[in-house]
Image (cartoon, rainbow, N blue to C red; front, side, top):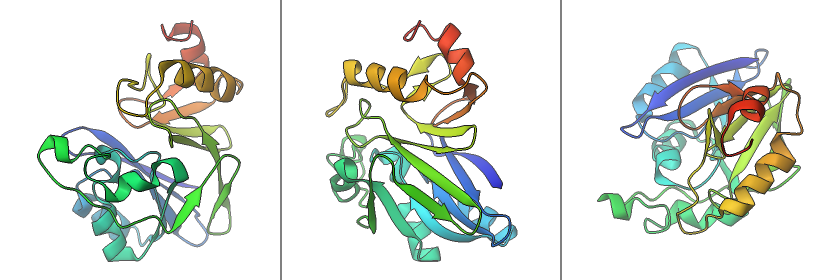
Length: 207
């Protein structure tokens, strides 16, 4: 499996590139900015972008959607509950940050239990974990979960934004993520990777 990560934009969002070694087809997860850095990596490694997957619709996770789609013609995937955020600078918060970011609309809406197949060998399972936003999702493959802004090392996603819910987020983390083995690796939208076991034992929001 291909797995690469980049830290992008002033908000230090983690963008992940995951895909199939056989076909070199990949998905770009959360291209929040610095499109040229993402495209350079794709070009240098001869990768073909099949999908752009947004774990949710906030500006720091969708900022380079337009540029990546223009360059690769990849399909944009997002949960149906956050789809409107792609095209609305107010709801994706770019307007409040002094800009007006409008992504192309979603090519495909995803939901709980969907399987996103990349190339011949990679399948990402969609886990719907609302709470940070109503369309927030995590993406699981094997013992790896891309958790977006649902869970961080020692913390959780903010819930004070419109559409956020602390109760809902905690419930989803406990019921949908903590059920996995302790050695399951979590790659968050910001900050370092962690494991389910570490968060189960040490995350003050979960213990």
